[in-house]
Length: 115
Length: 110
Image (cartoon, rainbow over all chains, first blue to last red; front, side):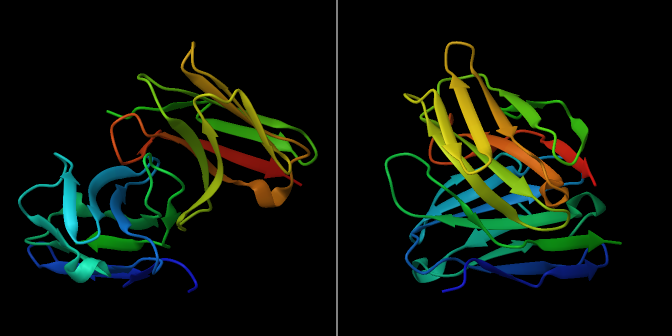
């Protein structure tokens, strides 16, 4: 296993279109996270899965955003009716189970540009 | 709002010099972590320090943690041009997720 992979790496879309990003975590990691990062800022937490259960969602995650992790393996993040403010880097990370949050392994990100 | 705040926002040094970045946070933590991000790439974990530890070393990196002041520092010794990147601290103060600061942009001039 070579790490966390994300697809696509870049996506340009028109306002109002739907987009979907995929994340394949490290296979033995049961925790999976989505973050959003805009230019000059640190990553902002969006949502977190433990296995297939979505345990936490940020208030940043509006109704237009939905994330899934069927069967506790890969995850998808869908943004419906995209807006220009959705333009950002969407980062996926995974980690091993534990009592506290340990090291996160990040993918290279999916950069979204909404025109 | 973000839990961690890094200082300075940007730092420019000559190759061979040491670089020090600071991080302050607001609430109790189990651990604090430092990550590095090259432009346009994902984040890479550098070091984790637990709340009961005061100092930790990894290669040219030295991290300190002062829980009474709710602050941490990252020291990179003998910097190289390849150390040019953004550096973020992150804490687990709010449950099973990491909350990141806005980062310090480090530029090492050769």
